[in-house]
Length: 387
Image 1: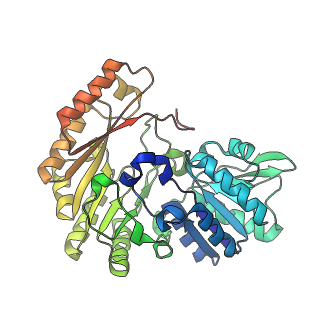
Image 2: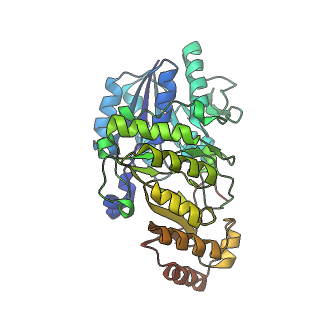
Image 3: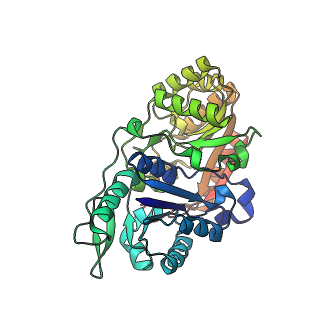
């Protein structure tokens, strides 16, 4: 079948900070594209932000492909635009429209209720559920019936019907490399605080799922609570492919918890050192996921910066949000990164329930104490599906 995948633009949601935001390959549809191509389907992914085209041009390219099924992927801020795009598509094609991504995973039934131009929703990890959905469409010619595939929600005789929960891919090493070759990676850029002027730059996600219970985080809605990681060998081969085939010189590891399995990071770093690849990279880390030995090894392997999720400088709030760390962990992590010569970014936020102005001031004082190269102050956003 011919499958069109459309990543709903998100850069506009940054407003005046648009130029400071990252513009990455949308790895969700990049992975889906590679997976479906491996199954024998023709797939066209559209990423307007990365291709630097308008939504109208993206829709034109999608319709020119004449897809049998259209997939829309959006975040919560982009869901209203996703609905607008779905309505435009409904007027110009008979191809069913399926929505996926973090927002519809949090509100699958409500998303269908709010947008009648969306025919079905995939909640959670997409590869297996979308593959099942396509097989149903090939067999039946339409997306309806009393029993949707696992992970799928659709309409049946005016009712919204949910399938069983979708399955997670246990062994990520069986996945093909994301289809980077179908995206305009020459336009990819990191966030301004990790922009060292080293290009081309792409993003990689080397794991899915997080065992942490942070009450503000929605990632479990699509990736689950079980940590599943690509092997160091797989990640290294992907990096070598990007360097050799596309000339990539900077990589942003966008895992929520890149350093969760330290032995895996050590192995990857050792492979990078032995390879002699001309590569620089950055990553995210929990504060309890960093120590002096790891920081030095990462620096030797080309790491230039780490973003620590500090969140708060108040012990009571730290306990309430389920982060599972202590303030001293942050002090130790920043110390280790600084000793290794890494650029340090600390992300904090305010606006937690029951947080007083004095507690928020604790966070400001703690950020000053940590003295990172960059402190990112964020307002709490209560995303759908989070406690």
